[in-house]
Image (tube, rainbow, N blue to C red; front, top):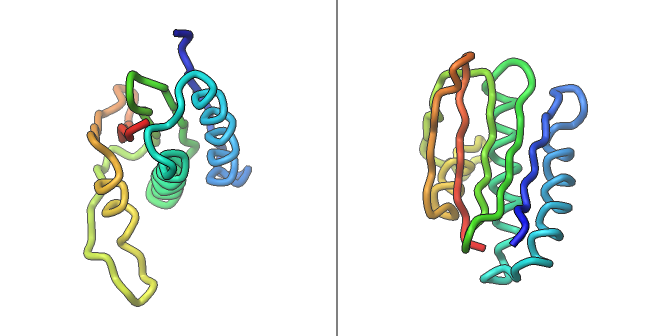
Length: 131
């Protein structure tokens, strides 16, 4: 099986969340040609996690970020790298529109989450989702 991988730098100036979603849709179309998703919601779940991770990278870090997607055996690895060494700080989700739901959703949808420091500074957050 040929590898399906996406490496996408994301500029803070060029609508990074929308750019990440567009690149992810193209990636998922290629991935689905090789292997159909396990569930009807698999594509939507990957898009949601990409949107949340990129939005958090833009909100809580300075500078650009990068998106890496990889089709694995039975899953898709979603990784976002930013320039902040700070790990995510989950907060209690609010029903008043103040947020807090993103990390909660990522943890519910992902089968495995990894946070690793980047030697030049920053971190990469990877969430593996069923495919």
